Length: 370
Image (cartoon, rainbow, N blue to C red; front, side, top):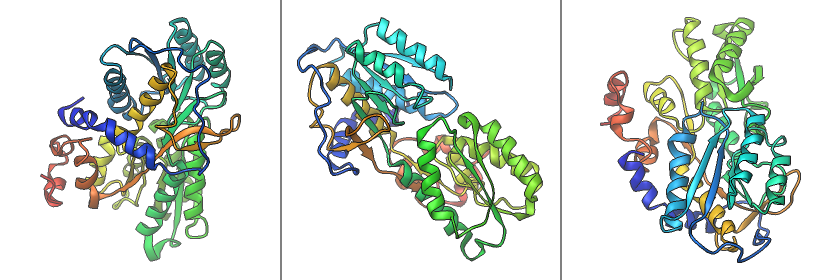
């Protein structure tokens, strides 16, 4: 982590706790989420961390180091994180759960590649006495705790931003919807929220569910949409995240458009923030990872030590296979040119120097970002 991220991580214990107390969601009280209190009391615990892919920068740039730091802080340096990345392969992730069981981890944090496919592995871990925290995506199976963002609200924020960007010209052409992978439960929430804002206000010319969230697949889909609709008929693009927005914008540029239509995004990736500064991407959704990752670590450490979750979670969420999962839902922010300073820079996610590289410097200067 860079110095600014370290500073953010140092202060995140109090922030994460404050967020957990104010988290939005169901008004139902959460349970303890602990089957066998008092099982593990020492600090020398092992937390398994399974992340879904490395195409999106957030997982290894933010989530992994922040979770590792919080586990270390909560265990006086005695606890450790055992990490594996599935690289978008659900079968690999299932095998990684088996490895974590063999390594006798005391709790497991899982960001599922496929929320349904992971259910059997979650049950297997639970049968071995290993509690499981669903991180960012609500995995199925006997999950003990869950933390994420309000994913349907993400879609609302993206869809509204696109409608606002189009203004009075919202029906003068057609938009393209580039949704995420159907194996990711969050993608369905993003899509639902976006449609609630877009339907009836714009004409949706083409819509895609993008395999594996890969930018090259989004690029290919966008090329198909341009061929089918005509480049001059496309007035906006709903992109579910920033990495896909990069592939979409590459296709739009290659088509020879003199002016790019507004394109949405999500995750506030560095490349996405830079595209926003340069005017190539209209917006992103900033999700404060300095809160989400540490909350997952708090949950996992508490479960590993046999401690109740009630001081961390105040809401519950239902999955298709389990009701009333103790949860923390973290607020999101619409990120545009207007609030880059007040969000990703202020929070220490990126420094001005990281954003304003040589190819972005002129655009930074123009908006007073120095």
